[in-house]
Amino acid sequence: MERRFIPTTKDEFESLGWQQPDFILITGDAYVDHMSFGAAIIGRYLEHRGYKVAIISQPDWQTTTDFGKLGRPRLGFLITSGNLDSMLCKYTAAKKIRSSDAYSPGGKAGLRPDRAVIVYGNRVRELWKDVPVIIGGIEASLRRFAHYDYWSDKIRRSILLDSRADLLVYGMGELAIGEIADRLNSGKALWKMTNIPGTCAIVADPPKNALVIPSYEEVVRSKILFAEAFKVQYQEQDPIRGKVIAQKHGDKFLLQNRPMRPLTDVEMDEIYALPFCRAVHPSYAQLGVPALEEVKFSLVSSRGCFGGCNFCALHFHQGRIIQRRSKQSLVEEAKLLTNMPDFKGYIHDVGGPTANFRHPACQKQLQIGTCADKQCLFPQPCKAINADHSEYLSVLRELRKLPKIKKVFVRSGIRYDYLLAENNSEFLRELCSFHVSGQLKVAPEHVSEKVITAMGKSRSEVFIKFADQFKKINQAIGKEQYLVPYFMASHPGCGLKEALELTEFLRDHGYRPEQVQDFIPTPGSMSTCMYYTGIHPMTGEKIYIPRSERERRLQRALMQYYKPENRDAVIAALSILRRNDLIGFGKNCLVRPERANLITKRDFRRKK
Image 1 (cartoon, rainbow, N blue to C red):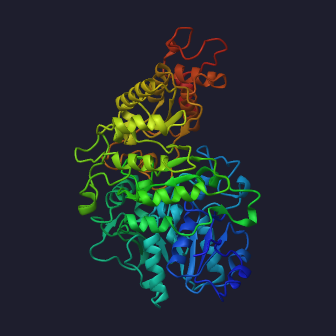
Image 2: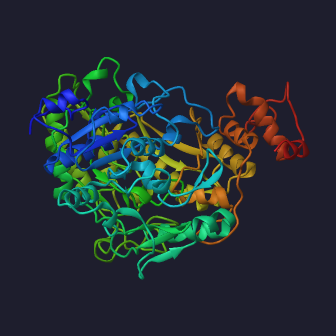
Image 3: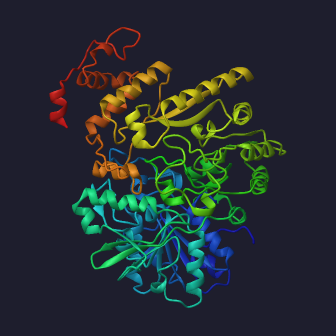
């Protein structure tokens, strides 16, 4: 197939001899024809199956004009907010508007509406009452049930209802949208497609085998029932053992079919070999799209995550069973990159959600599914886990040997507790020798036992062990390279006491984080359920939630205690904790006492 952009105007698709597209794909991102952009993948996949696809990117949502400019599609509209949830894309953890949007031309902010999937779906319905509308992408996927919305601070209905769409595709979506397209093309009615894996539909009554969870109305009234509903959603996200789930909304039911099966290696290879142009659409080529620059010379090697971090909804979207591309597929793409005019000899990244996940956690996942009641790496690696890194190492070695390639880096993060689950010293040595560009980013997130338990992360001792091995190997090979650990503030379970515990760890180990990640309760994650309910959904135990902006600000300040602008906030936090011993001139002190702006614990509580 020729390498051309998917049509975005009537002139473009008419020049191909089309009278109308089969599908019109509406996305909140700029159109970038690259496999790291969901709209491009779905568009190319449908083309591969013989369908005519056109794209409307970042339409003006104030009127219906842009939504009607390509006419009516023969089979249906496909709608996504883009690669990110539109609310997360626009707002910070403090609910302030972001100054830029990496998925828009020139990084310009404000080119998509709040809750883009809902807005786009309703605009389409204003023009065509009966045209099939299918929503998908991460915003639809993570908001498929009644969910907590941090930005409005309330429980919202399933996005399938509010968008007035016919079907919702959750997960990565290729196989599900292919099945839907084929059924539509054969003349079947969309309202009858209620049994396709990886989809959600609205039905009058659920099937007898469905697990009925507390309704929208019930979870609005009861946080306990919200946590119970989430627990079922979490446990049943498996393509092999998962059950159909139904949640009542008014007089109808949101029906979720079990997840679609994982892609095979061959299917993954076929998708990533589709004829992507690997560039922004020519209409804004001069402006560029910042998100492309991050991935232009990187290789996606896998999908899915069995890591189980509770603040991440990746497993809820991509699943816990790893899907991978073959070594040959990665090598062929790397060769293609070396022939691009602006390639400088560097592969920036070889990975996926977690770089060193290249096969299922254990063999039984492909036979009977993932475990419903335990995680693969938490609280420690499962005895059945396969942490062999030899295949991933062979991929990196093959890439290093290619002509025109100077360096192959791994920067998307190594899951070090998985690495340490088996003897992978050879892998770590080669990683340090050839694939680290001076710094390696890892994500311990916290050190407090209470917080890491709520996060589903490994204990601080594991990170210390890895850091020690990393240091020793670099000393042995004569390289000066450093770990850049990510830590998070204000996660459920983290009060000022736990924040100070992390601060003292940072002080004692010489870490001075330049950036602090503030927990954002995004839809679909277990930590968001904790944030809203104050309950750990898997255990039913109550958990402390740092809700006030003041406390969140003090936690951030503690993590960056060394910055002069944080000094007063650090003193305030230490005074609340009655840890004035850390205010002074001793080697363990965090700040000096002069110009102290002390407040009392009582003042702090009153201001909360």
